Image 1 (cartoon, helix red, strand yellow):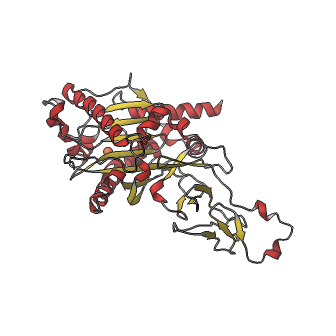
Image 2 (image 1 turned 90 degrees about the horizontal axis):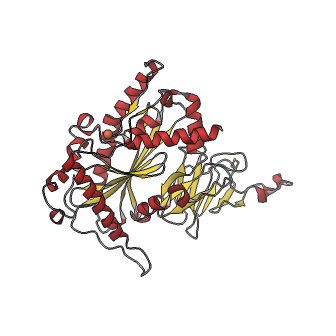
Length: 412
Ligand code: FES
Ligand SMILES: [Fe+2]
């Protein structure tokens, strides 16, 4: 899947004051690659202090599940889209995965707004298709709203004498667009989002250098899975299973049970070595070829951005998001593959759609088959059975610990 990347083009339209993101990516790549190859040489991996036991109820308890949906997915910032999903004024994006249907729309000035996707007449779903619009009209009785949510037209106005129509604008939800990431808080009229506080400065800097604001979506698919969302999410956070579960797919492309792990509070970044790194182990760094960036960025609680390489020196960003459904044992995953900004000179489409299809197939047929079987088994496991996360599954430990901490804080 990887051929050496020979050039990473400089970032266009860069003013004197703007950071050199391409150079920052290269530096970050070098540091990460150095660490990861050192792990291969020493046959080591980054480890937590100890193994961690979980209660099986973490995956099976409906009450805990309801708390997770509310506390993690509705009350806290959650990634709704990337800027490239609604690039032009008038573009709309529907985000229904966290419960309340949310409508994200780019207004005439290019600013992103988000609302409950609900007509203020009698609550019909206002927008049902992600198309470019000047105004949004409800299909039920034709109330019409502008791109800032203002009620600007309605048939039969005289029937609503005495009603304060100025109070019938769309109901906003907090939204922020930051370096190509669009976060919402799924609470009507909720508190504003401070993205850098949510991500932390150091992690925000790491994400900024990916230049996600220039990424262009190439393909999106959905995978429904009969497992708790965390059982599905857990498959993204360790390379311990590569050789055993994915012998002819991921396991042929990346080395098992070797990982460089960087913690950023609830978030983290992982790097698992690509198979060709083995060739570099007995060479000095000066002889390592220029390779693409490869790292997995996890944004708490449910996003993985896989910045990685495709054959021919190409790079892709694979964004996977796992969402809990209403039932404790059902989840849905949205996978979108983006062409990064530094690849836009490449007019090909297929390398990205093929990579997308490959990942979709591996996740749906290999990873999630295990998630479904494991979830099913947990229903029958003895009450005192405790799944265990090894010290080598440090990223999963980080996720589970932070979820537990947030839920406990909520109960106080
Ligand atoms: S519910 Fe939308 S116009 Fe009536
Ligand atoms: Fe996997």
